[in-house]
Image (cartoon, rainbow, N blue to C red; front, side, top):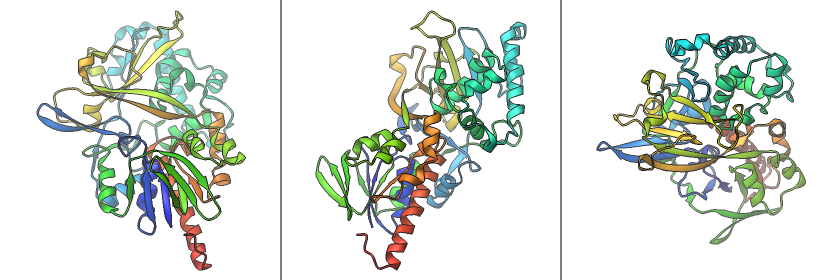
Length: 431
């Protein structure tokens, strides 16, 4: 078949990689680079060329089996990474790094603060009480806020630990984290072994930057057509699919939407009511990422630095101390084992001033918002896929991570191959 794939994030790339050996595949990408959240930048620092990621950064073989298998088949190497986590609250003065044995107690005066002691006690309680929870039995409508209220968890635990961690994981505003379904959070924590202190997976990062696997796909799948152009409209017919760009209209036998759900609906000229009902439940959050080398945003003591660092400040739009602004900085030297003395950071939604002359690049990404409506819509994937010569995939069908994108694409690939196989057996031409 002649297949159009709209979007070159992990879902579109995985689908193209799998399908290109038997089908004619064309990938359309509206950005000025292929990869979506796989976004690698090359900088000349200290006389050497360094690859720095600002979107997708880490994975592990246990939780990312499909993605890991793809890397192995493509011959793309990875290296061990570090997934430490620390918080520096400039409002309350609380500063801790639970990743290091003694850094949790960085400030002895913390032990004279009730908030710190409450946070510590609730941290242990939350992890212990949820590591063996039967997720299937959890109420899918119960939000994280509601669960924490029901079990009397302290504000300190929420705002100093759990919410910042969830905000960093899902690139979500911390004041929205409480609306995420409790079942969604706990299932993710369990699956990624985050509720246990031992036998946690070893995290990896792609050598040479995450875009290395895109280069490998381009080399190994020479028959894929790469179109660096935006699609403006898609219309489906009984015998073909029309894809419109600034250069005109092309006809395909099948279309795969590997784009954000709302973008997909905007492209479809003939979206069914069912497609609108399902895809319309997925919302998105705009996020600002700054890659820089201004280490003034980090704690003065290097022992308090971590791969994932949360810095908390007062929200300038309110005088209430309950309204805080959370920024997230990823320490790229630690995450990617960068061989330079200059310390490089990728800061998401900065809440501290970053010197303009130390900014290397800025990006704007959009991430899925995982509320109850979105989680319910995920269950309806089969209702809209495989009809009208179209399929829908993306990380938004799972937890929003790279493996979710690959898994979603794998479902689409399997479905298309079944349709193609049945057509061949019946002597029906799909093209």
